[in-house]
Image (cartoon, rainbow, N blue to C red; front, side, top):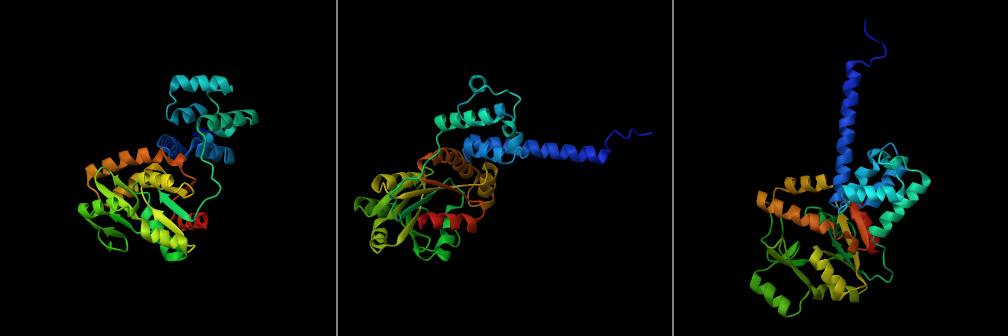
Length: 298
């Protein structure tokens, strides 16, 4: 006769699947912190808001070692300093422990704070395959009050791209001429391969007319704009997760294996730069992300 206290096989199987899914979700969250898709503060906020979530069930030692530059030895010292047990979960932290852990993160890894006195020049940047172009195009179609700048590039057009609408497609000689003539607000070589630049004339004219201008450019270009126009508003577009960024790049199908590997390496470096930006926007859905960027632009 079966023991009534023993759960049936179907319940054990379901519980096992839930446990595996929870472990995978926690692993994904740790990977997102390591690759800087989310900040440690983001993960802590999720855990405290919902202690029963995957973030809430993550043990503090796992959380700490997911942060770049924190190994096992440093993790143990931090736990000792904060007087947090190694078996403690993020969602189960006491009031004092929450405050102390938050203070530790803010001191070691401060999040960017928006600056006052920003101009109508808005820069949208982010890692490869995050969807910058798609979000920018959505803004162009649904927010005509915002002028989307058209960049010049030395790469060949992709299927469906139109010269003068998506990019100004130029050869290296013409790009050199534009640089020497001072016609570009910024320019950079992306992925060690192609050059991109932003023509200065249309932007200056639009700003003089009181319009808001959106630049969809890469990280190098964003830094040049910040140097040339310190009051520009810089917005960093993030993927929902690192796994989603990889899936988008693979699914796009426009790069070969070598190019994809190179772009993913670049993406990890780019994600680490998000602290240089005024705002961070997650591209979970294009309409929502575009609406948030447009609101920041206004």
